[in-house]
Length: 253
Image 1 (cartoon, rainbow, N blue to C red):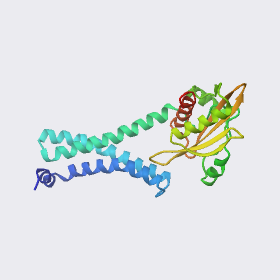
Image 2: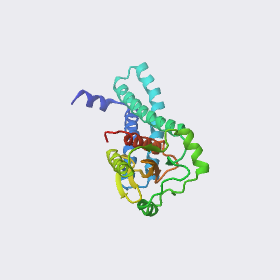
Image 3: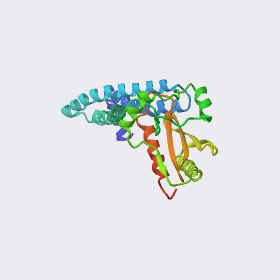
Image 4: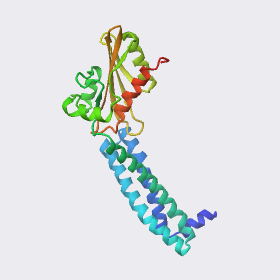
């Protein structure tokens, strides 16, 4: 029998419990997220598992610190490794949760972002898809959203270019594809392209529409990105719009 197996056999039950608790806590994160993405349970179920993981990690961390001190004071070698491993794992969960909370509190709780707050680009093909999923409404409340958006995301603004509209529309399609979005529709007559982005973990979907209009001999581009679910997007929609704008300004695209 190996030394590790012997140590495990002689280990106090509470040390094993803290180790198992830490493992269960961190497993709640990917299981909750992937379960929601695969449709095993709704998003609320996934978030509940995340909450369970955080609560469990909190308990393991504080009890683990006490147990670790006890192990060092009493020289409990068999228990010390398991306890410290549980503490470290739980700390990883708590740091992850803390970063998410920090991000959420640093940005406004909005999920409908556009470069043109007076005349936002309108979705077409994706309207029915969103309605079928009972997604967030597409109406843009400029009085409420525009001040919050402009203060938090000053870089989200229209792009004026000397590139002809037809060529700019092609660049927009290429940019969305380069970012990994699924292009749903390209309306060349209307100068519009619609696409969807899906997150890896939860499978959250954000819909994007790019509108290209003539501006003198060039074009003006407006982009809108709207989350299907959730109140806050953690800044992802604005981040996506800025990335598209940067790609469109890239002459090599």
